[in-house]
Image 1 (cartoon, rainbow, N blue to C red):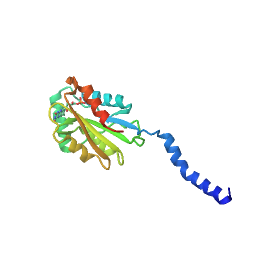
Image 2: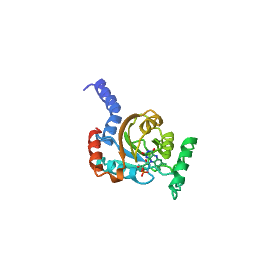
Image 3: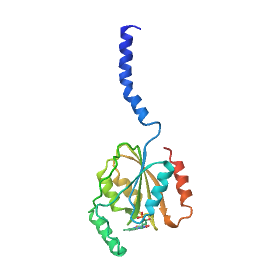
Image 4: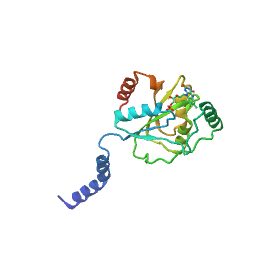
Amino acid sequence: MNKKTITGLAVALCLLMPAIAHAQATPGKSKVAVIYYSLSENTDMVAKKIAALLNADIIRLETAQAYNTRDMVKFRDFAKTEQNSKKWPELKPLKTSLSGYQTIFLGSPVWYSSIANPMVTFLSQNDLSGKRVITFGTCSGGEGDFFKEFDKNIKNAFVEKGLMFQNASNDKGLDKKISDWVKKVKL
Ligand SMILES: Cc1cc2nc3c(=O)[nH]c(=O)nc-3n(C[C@H](O)[C@H](O)[C@H](O)COP(=O)(O)O)c2cc1C
């Protein structure tokens, strides 16, 4: 081997090293997270089932100050006022960095035909650029503009509309619905 060939090989190796290191850090599988907000545990239940099937990390969004839900009629008025005035609630800081996740399932309950207020805060504070984002929700009767509002609030990501789970806590077919759907989402 002459000097020129050896230098050429050394340069090629230097150029390839980062790619080799990256390949070792991500062994062929995207890193997946399920990020969700849930007030009364329906979305929590669905999120946990998705995460278990995909062996994904799970991140629950929490408001810095717990909502007062002792009187649900008053709470609903409060949530409506927050939504109308766009005074989105502060969140507790996330304990996990999102930078390593290539695919994110984002779940929220439907609040007044839209996404829940804490999810709006999360999306205004977190850049999901370049990630694959799959949205899902839970509701009691009507989803309204939920998925449209989700899309509107997610910036620069590849957003895929996922599923809406209506009356999830009483749905006997819930497990099958989730697993059939998750199987179809190619990761
Ligand atoms: C403030 C508020 C607004 C809601 N608005 C709607 C709505 O517009 N349409 C609907 O079908 N359900 C609505 N719901 C019901 C929730 O979407 C439903 O119960 C959901 O599964 C709750 O999810 P969670 O248990 O994860 O909080 C509303 C609930 C709350 C608290």
